[in-house]
Structures are given as structure tokens and as C-alpha cells.
Amino acid sequence: MQNSNLQVLYLILFLNAKNKEINSIKNDMKLKEVKFVKSVDINSKEVFFDEKPEIVFLGRSNVWKSSLMNAIFETKDLVKTSSVPGKTRTANLFLLNNKYYFTDLPWYGFAKMWKEKKQDIDSLISWYIDEKKANIKTAIILIDSKLWPQESDEGMYRYLLELGFDITIVITKIDKVKNNNLKNTLTMCEKSFFWQPIYQVSSKNLTWIKEFRNLLFEKIVWQK
Image (cartoon, rainbow, N blue to C red; front, top):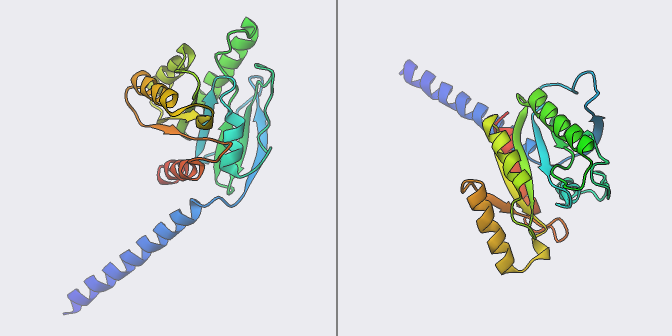
């Protein structure tokens, strides 16, 4: 009888601990605060490094990366944008709930960019990703709903895949295209990215933004 009582007690203690853990995780998945931390460039002596879990955002020019991040953060202009491709040459780190980094990496694949600038940006992206690969829980590649995946998108996907990253593909600006065109873009994304799940959002109308933010919290909280 005594052993039976001890087993029940252990079970109760175990369930209580699990409930506290689950409640803690649920609490972590709520957006409480977000702030800009700093920018890192290719000339930094060392990358801004700690053990906080991180998500990085990548994409070609005009995919509305900054707008999407502001929508996720529920802010208007915390994430700044430049109208000049190649002008932004830093990795910009934002801290959520004092626990997680969401990092805005520069545009890639802009055809008219000077060769030297393009090489600098490509070097920054590869350097940053390599330095932070132990902490990055998913790398997000954004695709313009008006365009099919470009060669640079597919190249970035293959590069991240070879490094073993979890990759999240997102079609942006879905409010800007008709359903048939969106379906075509979705089909091409599925083919280009080996039929992995493709997510669709609109930062203007906030379509699927809350659901997408929850998905990112799941990736960064459960994988930490």
C-alpha cells in the first residue's frame, strides 16, 4: 500500500511539473515586447553572440520583408526599410520578450546592384548565418506573390538546406494578386522547394499574420 501511495505521489508531482512547463511555454509564445538591439556588419570584429534562439528573415528586394516583420511585431516602423537596394548592408537584430532574436538580413539577388556591393551582401549573409547557425531555429525565405521563385531564391534555399537549417517559405503580398495568379505562384513554390509547406501572408491586410507569428513562436520555443 505504501509503494502504491508513493507512485501516486510521484505521478502527481510529475504532472504538476509538466503543467508548469506547458504553461511556461504558452506564456513564452505571447508577444509582450520587442525592441531593436543593434546592427552587425561584415566588418564587425565578432558577431553579436549569445545563446538566445533566433529566426532570420531573407528575401529579394521588394518582398516587403520589413513590413512583414513590423506586422509580426505589431509595430508600424520599428523595422526600417530602404528604397535603394544594396544600401542596407547590416544584419539588424530585434529582441522579443527579452528571449528571442528576430533578425532582418539584407536583400539578396538584386540584378542591378553593383558587383562589389552584391559580393559584400552575399558575404555578410553567409558569414552571419555561419556564425549563428547553432542558435538559428528557422530561416525564412520570402517570395513575392507577383513573381515565381527566382534563381537567387532557389540558390539561397539550396545553400540553407546544405547547412541543415529548418527553412520556412512564405509568399508575401497576397492581397496584391488575384487567386489564380496566387495559385500559380504557390504551385511554382512547391515545385522549386521540394513540396515543403508554403505559407501565405499579407502585411497590409494582416491576413494570416497572427497564425504565422504563432507558427514562428512554436519553432523558436519548442526547439530551444
